[in-house]
Structure formats: structure tokens, C-alpha cells
Length: 277
Ligand SMILES: C[S@@+](CC[C@H](N)C(=O)[O-])C[C@H]1O[C@@H](n2cnc3c(N)ncnc32)[C@H](O)[C@@H]1O
Image (tube, rainbow, N blue to C red; front, side, top):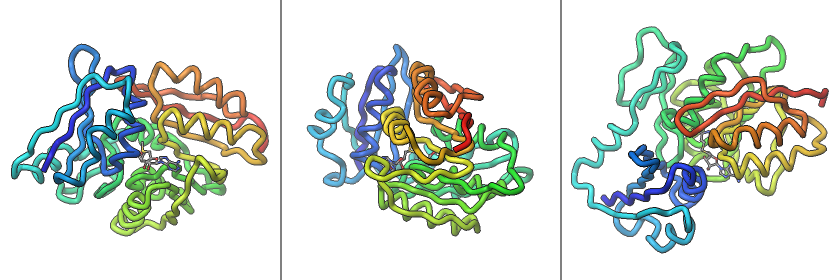
């Protein structure tokens, strides 16, 4: 097993992560380093990892260094170390299948398989925190999980009483992982393959969108003049320094910021519809 590691400056983290997820959707390990650097690592057998030149071409100017190392027989343990359970808001416990359930928290089992979303990445954890604070309305409960990855956000929503839940992702591995995770958790979630760059995202009372900055910007462009807007959006995957700019873009299409959460360099926004759409 090979570990391929890229170091970038934290200000380039989002660009690098977006490109890496396209090349290696099988999950990316993120390690904060001193001196404002972030290391991203992907794992795979020799021959199944993207070639170094494709990484360098994709991440381009953001790259500080790239290295590869052999991971001996501790691959399985290493992956298990990386995928740790997470207690969110004191009441939602996101855990891998090999960890025991929490005695007092709502249980959410996530095996990300080849998709992004153990729950532990700051972008996901921030969404989950905001989701937990969202009151579940008695009538309009439909949710869209835009860029659902492992399905962690949509499944959490279903467990909290939202539904129907629709998960959308352009990566077929994410579609499979989300459907399997929904089954394991005993919740109903329709999952479809969908490309936000060429298709219009459906509006729902609640849209969960952990998409990274560039895709959030494309979505904003789609929303200009849209016939219907979501009542509430929880948007994540943006860097803190981009939060004002993205908030203004969403504000201009009729989705005003009502809350902001920050963890490390990452931020998430809660946006509410200001016009009847
Ligand atoms: C940052 S991950 C979030 C995954 C999961 N929702 C979570 O919170 O952990 C972003 C997801 O967006 C998906 N994605 C990227 N580009 C997309 C596109 N053009 N259309 C739909 N989904 C896309 C990726 O495959 C990935 O699963």
C-alpha cells in the first residue's frame, strides 16, 4: 500500500482538496502541520493511485511538496486510526462499523468505503452541528443532500426526523456508499447520480451542501432567477476567508446568512430564504 502525500499552504487547502477529490474520491486524509501547511494523503495499491504528474498538474501552483511512502501491513489499522467516532453536539454519534455505539447518543454508522465523508472532516462536522440545531418542521421536511459523499449528512437528517431525503452526487462510488449506509442505518434515502455543473439542483425546504467553494459559486450562479429557492441551506466546504464573499453571493440570490460556524480554516453558513420562492 502506498501513501501519497501532498503539502500545500493552508490558504491553498480548498483548491487542493477540490482537485484531489476529483482524482481520488476514495477519501483524503488531512493533517495540519506547523508553519501554515496542510498535508493531504491518499492511499492505494501501486498502480491504482493517480500518477504523480496528474497530481502536480491538477494542484499546480498550490503544491509545496509531494512524497510517497510505502505503508506496510498496518494499512487496515491506519485507516481505522483515521476514521474515529465523533460525538456532535453531545447527541449525535457518528462512528465506523467497528466502533461500539454510544450509550446515550443518536447512532449513525458510516462506512465511507470509497466516498468522502467519515463525518470527522471539519466541513462535515460543521454541517452536522448546524443540522442538529435546525428545528424539524411539522410539514415541510424534505431534504436534499447535495454532494452526498458517504451520505452522512442526509442520513443524519433522516435520523433527526427529516424526510423524504434525496442524496445527489456525481461520483458513482458516492451513490453506492450513500445507499448502502442508508440501508445499514435503517433510513429511507433516495440516492441519484447528478452533476451540479450541468443540472439544476432541486429546491427543498432544507438543502445540505458541503461542496467546497468553487462548486458553491457555480450553484449560486444557477440560483440567480431560480423559480424556487430552498427555505434553509446549510453550506459548507468554504474556507473561513471566503465566507464573507460567499455569504454576499448567496445573499444576492435571496439566501441571507443567519449563522456561521468556523473550525480551523473551514467555515459553514446557515442561509435562509428572504423572498417567497
Ligand atoms: C466535500 S464532499 C462532502 C461529502 C459529504 N456530504 C460530507 O459532508 O461529508 C463533496 C462531495 O461533492 C461531490 N461532488 C463534487 N462535484 C460534484 C458535482 N459537480 N455534482 C455533484 N456532486 C459533486 C463529491 O463527489 C463529494 O462527494
